[in-house]
Length: 468
Image: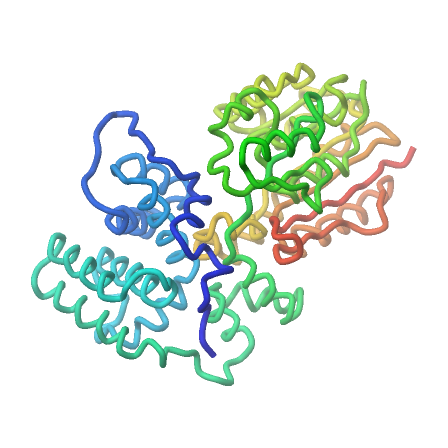
């Protein structure tokens, strides 16, 4: 069984493919200072800081790219190496363990990261000559360490190249271990998903999590139709097509970072995953209604709600973080929306600011484990723990208990998450319904989207109605 070969459908098989993920371009530093070095130095910098500081890969990568004076191809290669190495981390370590005599854990962090990113290139990328990977790694080791380390790096990588074709997982592994190593996920998480979702679906999810996300945008229907936006993008030479999942969604290829375009600045669209677009659709806001978005930042769903209600009515966007209030306000202003009002507080305290039964519709896009968006944040799967998942369920339960009284009889409550966990999703809703018989399902069954189904984020949406 060969693991993950054939990068054509994976994270990207060329700098161009990787560039789409990074947004492309040659970032300019805000402070004017630049670090010397190439794509691999930048990638090593990112990977080392992720391991040492547990920083988020997407934010840290952006910061590091600003510091290195890289051309567009190198930006793409850095992005490919960083995300690919993180995605395949436990499989890389599994194979490297055969070649590092004293074990990976005893290596200095920077040496460990250097071996990992080098193995990723040798084993998973077809376009980079093996000798180039080795030479670059040895030179980096010489600059950062001493002769002994560079010699060790040279020996390990040359051994890997000689035995590359024989690097396969053993046959007959138990299902959880096989899936965890084939698709690089923590074994505890794979076991958990197998118990909830079955072996076949779990493997489909894990495989999909290693495929880069598509660029999807949401048309601002207050300014133009989806077909007109697609026509505009195509006339500019971009590949654009209607989303099969979201009525307001458009898939774009070849556009780089769409947030840097004049169309975005003019409020013609927002950048949002297709699954996430279905939340406002489920809420079905109507013009003139009073609506509450309990956990609103950064404002993607908030602004979609405002657009769906024709920007007529009263939409309150709440978030616990003061610095995120500005994000919501900026999005509303960019899109030309006047119905959005913001409030900074813990959603569990909203009853102190609003009267009971004062809202027609409420959205609780609850804080969650985020296991449906691993494709976008690959480091998440290595940083999560089972204890953390149980802890987030407590917060979700408290939020539901505190906000449901704000809904009028006959009103709609939508509960959504970007995770795949039963306890956070259907289990949480069933627990709430059991405790509150005044609520009922307003749809035959909740909507659970898995990452492999539409090449979108994993998402859960439940629509409830308060009995009149």
